[in-house]
Image (cartoon, rainbow, N blue to C red):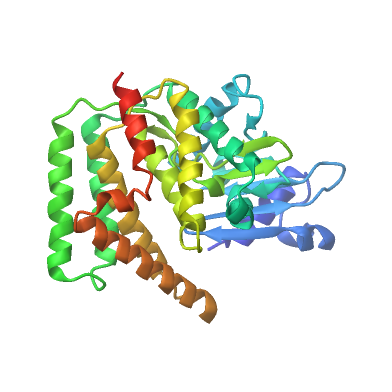
Length: 347
C-alpha cells in the first residue's frame, strides 16, 4: 500500500511536472516538505520551487470529502466580496484520482495559538476577529440549505454520538451509559416533532481552521461542509474555544468575551436559527466525542499521553455535570449569548 508520504511526493512531482516518483524530487525540495497526519487525512506544506510559490497539499479520505471540500470552498469564495477580510486560500489544482487538492500556502498564525498566547490580556484585535467570523458564518449559512432531510440529519447525529459512546464504555458506569442513551433518545424524539432549520454549514467551524495573516482571516478545511443544522457550526465554534483555552487558568472571562463577540457578529446578519433541542444534541455529541478522542493516546509520547489523559478526565467531568442537569455551566458561562441568539432567531 502506498504511504501518504509517497502519495504527497508523487502529487507534488506531478504538479511541478517532474518525473513521477519520490526519488525524482530534488533533495532540497523533499527536505522542505512538512507533513501532518490527522485521523484518516494527511496534509503537507511544500516550499517555493522553480519559480512557483509554496503550496499546501491535502489528501482527503474519500471522494465525498473531496467533493465537499470543493463545494464548500466555492461557496466561501463567492462570499469574498461581502467581507474582503475573510478569505479562503486559492485552489491551484485538484487531482480526483488521488483525492487530493493543492492550495496556496498561507503563511500566518493559527487562531488557536494566537488566543493561547494572548488570552490573559486579550487584545481588541482578537475580539474583532471572532466578531468578523460570526458575521462571515451567518452569511455562509444564508447561501442554501443542503440536500439532506431533517430525519437524515437527526439520524446521522445520533449514530455519531452512539459510535463515540461505544469507545468510552470502559470509562462510564452502566447506569451512566444508559442515561446517555435515554437522554439522546428523548432529544431525538422531541426534535423530530419540530420543523427545524437547516443551512449550508462549514461542518468543522473551529478556531484551528482559521489562519490570521496581517489583517486578513483565512477559513480552511471544508471537507465536512454541506447541509446541516446551523447549530452545528455555532456549537462547534464554542467548543473549539473551550478546547483551546478552557483548560488554562483564569480563562472563563475570556471565553465569555470571545463567544459574546462571535454571537454579536452572527446576530447582526439575520441568523438562520437556534433550537434548544438541537443544541443539546450537538452538545452531547461534542462531549462524548471529546472524551473518546482524548482517550486515543497510544501513539503519543509519554508527556503528551499524560496531557491527553488529563484533558480526557476534564471532558469526562463536564459530561457527568451535563448528565446531572448542570446545563448552564456546560454552556461555558455563555448562557446570555445563547439566549440572545435564540431571541434573535425567533423574531
